[in-house]
Structures are given as structure tokens and as C-alpha cells.
Length: 211
Ligand SMILES: [Zn+2]
Image (cartoon, rainbow, N blue to C red; front, side, top):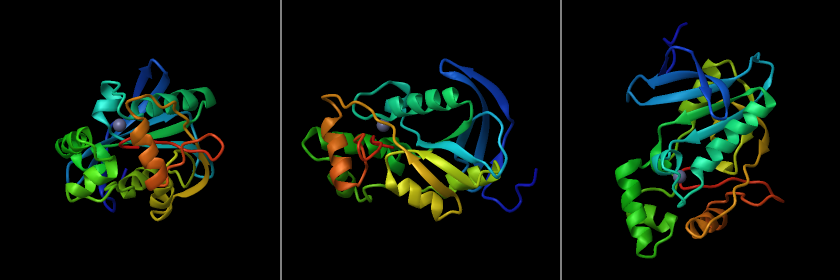
């Protein structure tokens, strides 16, 4: 395949049986930064199909360790289960830890939250925007996979905008409803109130430090 006109290189497509279903995995690498991303794919589709899609930004603490400070890990598992049950869909796993500020800065932000700042104030204090994520590469990966239209598993309106600005049509948003816990409730409330995330069932939505 030609990757001449893109910002990304596509790697080998392999089978990936998981606890949550049988998927295929394709790695992608950004040519300039070398950052590596993944597409987890279920089923077959054509470019005319509207594909159930999750754009998930890496959250090492939530995805790997099951941190209760956010809901990333639960969102990822829920998305995998939904896609497995529907028999068709894609998860794009983007290396943009900590809403795009990286692990070191994310821990600085956590430290500021330990002394009373909310997740937005902490980012601003560190000189970052509340959300530094970029969905151009995610959109480019979808385009490379032949996807033009998606039903997006998200609670984050910025993701819809980010994909649509990069040529992916978001036909529908499907919420991922995650129960809050005592450790992430303040964080989730902040995202809902100040970042426009839609976390409640009646209005749909999704949340997390990274997602
Ligand atoms: Zn997280």
C-alpha cells in the first residue's frame, strides 16, 4: 500500500484474541514524531458503511493499572465489548497520554490536583490548554482503513469536531456511561461542567482524564 501522501506508516495486520473478543490489530507510526498508534478492528466493512468507532487516547494509569482517578480503562473495555457484541467496529488507540501533555506532565497535574486544583486548573497552571489532544492522526488512520462515516462511541464533543474537521463524518454519537466512584467524581464533574462532556444517560456522554 502507498503511504507516500500520508503522515503515517501502516504496519502488519495481525489477529488479536482478547478477553473481550477476537480482533485484528494494525499498528501505525507517525513519520515525523515516530509516535506509534493502534487500530483494533472487528469484522469486515466497505467505505460505504458507517462504522462503530471509538477514538481512545492512551491513559497508562487507567488503561493498564485500572486507576480509579479516571474512567479511561472502563471506557476502553466497554467499547471493546460493544464492538465485539455488534460484530463490527474499530478502536483507534492514540498515543496522546494525559489529554496530550504526556505522562510526566500528567503526574504534575495530578500532584496539583492533590492540593486542590481541578483537572482544568492544573493544566492551565502548567501552561497547557485544558485539552491538548489532536484528532488529525486518528482521522487519518480511519481514512487509511477506508472509513468515511462513523458512529462514534464517546461523550466528548471535541472528538466529533476533531474528526469532522479532518474529513470523517460522525453520523451518530453513542455514549459510554461509566459509574463514577469517590476518586473520580470531582474530576468527572469538572469535565461535565467545564469541558462540555456529556456524561449522563439522558443526554448521552463519556468522560476521563484522557477521554
Ligand atoms: Zn484516564
